[in-house]
Length: 603
Image (tube, rainbow, N blue to C red):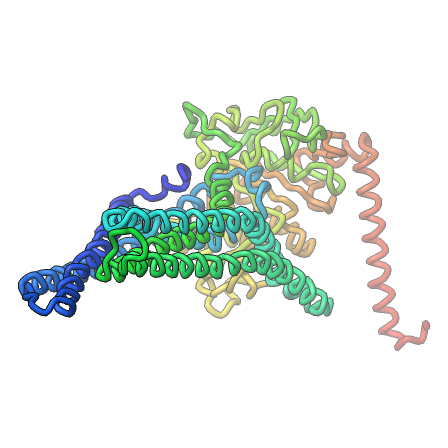
């Protein structure tokens, strides 16, 4: 609660005022039955005493006071509802905002601790659960105890023996509620975990819907969805079964208490049992009985909501309490002098608890303006290596420097604005081409956009689009091809005017001719930028100033294409296998042409 209530902020006042007005409503509900006793007493005396003179003024005054109390109770109830709604909705708004802001501060290592579907569930469903519990709590958790205690006091004034009946009923009811809540909380916790799995299935299927349809696997995905929903159903039913047991127990205790009150009270009224209860008091005691037990029932409902949201509270706190693994420097550097890069005895593991390093003993120096290629087998650590340059992760050992300064000493925005990265998985957003490109520079002019597009060899296809730079790409860039996406992402990165630009296999979806054109364009238009290419094709890096060969997280060799062909067996094997594949492809093309020319006679 200490963590969550920090998000109240400007909604503290309605959160405080709501319980106060609810106390006012409870007070009026206590006073009204007491006033009713005087009226009933007067009417009873009129019926039983022939010479009794009715005190009309007393009846009028009590009646008027009852009306005033009822109106005030109505006002307090309405205001309580409005204040509770404002406070709970504002609380949920701030909670979502605080969670999202904290998520934005996460490093990639932090994000790895949560699945995307889990974060979505926590920001949406879990916050809604907490909102409902909070609204119920500030309205009822003060009102109900006040109603309970005041009703007990008023009952003691009328007849202490009756108060003991109410207290006994409340204790029994409290025990039933406690046992139910103790059993139901674990089921709700499991249910929310299954919600994460359900959202994961939905997200994965909708993201990969084209693959699902291409492989005709709709039936399999429907079955996965059914299994996920069945798990949510199973635990929600277990929880609801326990909660449905609660309400009959509440009803039994309430009605048993009322029957006991009427039985004992009526016997007191006729003199069979010693007591101070008169006929006029029976109705009042009945009302107080209902209020006492309804107070307990309200508390039970609040506990029900709190139990449902207990798991949600813990999950929200996990997001809010997660601290970035990339601490801010005390005296940050706000200028990147050049694009030089240096690795000094760098080790890296994705988890601090892991005994296995992804990178080990990396020593490397890249001069500003150089073009560098990085190759290696899948899992050799290529992406991990370049992820340390813009400080997407921190090295677990050693130092990474950019512009001669340790990346941990830079202001984060300064560093990442000067180190652009075109990721292996290209991501575009809903909106126009221009809006997506301006992620690189919000103030970019049309001329800047066109220059960046030209450097990325994207200008020609953009101009061919129906609206050019104003063409709507659709959600995730569905209206353009994979190669076009990659070129748009390269243009977006160039608009940042970086000192270093990293291409994480980001030209894999373009043909070799376009790949060569992009590299030539970058060499021509941006010679001062340090360019790091991760590639699978030797042709994409063989003209680089230096090529880094990674093998199992270690640098196997560094040199130019010619040097590596002589000194690196790994590089030579990759080159020969790709050239062999290229020759086979050329032979296949020649064979197809000959086959077409002879009309298939060679077969």
